[in-house]
Image (cartoon, rainbow, N blue to C red; front, side, top):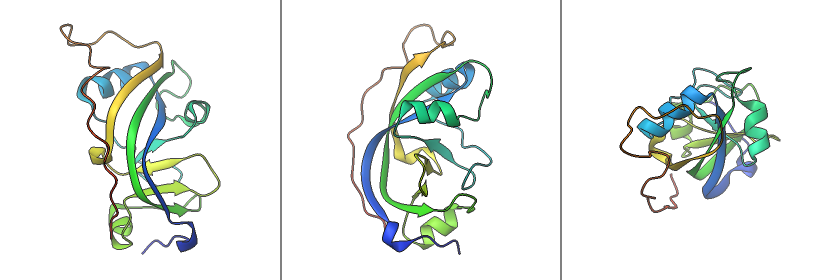
Length: 152
């Protein structure tokens, strides 16, 4: 079982966070309204966000040297475990501890494992390729209501 600092367990609720990626990946995210979790990262596989746009751009992994597109989303963090960099966080380890999101200790980095906690994905800036569906703008959509939950 992966452990976290219980003193650092945070109830963050829903926060608007930033995610930076390539133009093509951003287009796919906006068209499908879903992120594809990465296979690795500072604390394991997942979807990474930052509170600050600049931090998201600095830490992006997809399309490391090319175009940069910044997205924002409402991320329902609820109970967040704070883990040291290099800890491998899995869905099982989070669930067993009653948490469903993780934060890298001393860094502006949050991670969720899947899309069920991510809502209202929006384009912020960058060179965005044309949408494959020309009859609607998928970068704006109906905004689901934010919910605060405690797990565990």
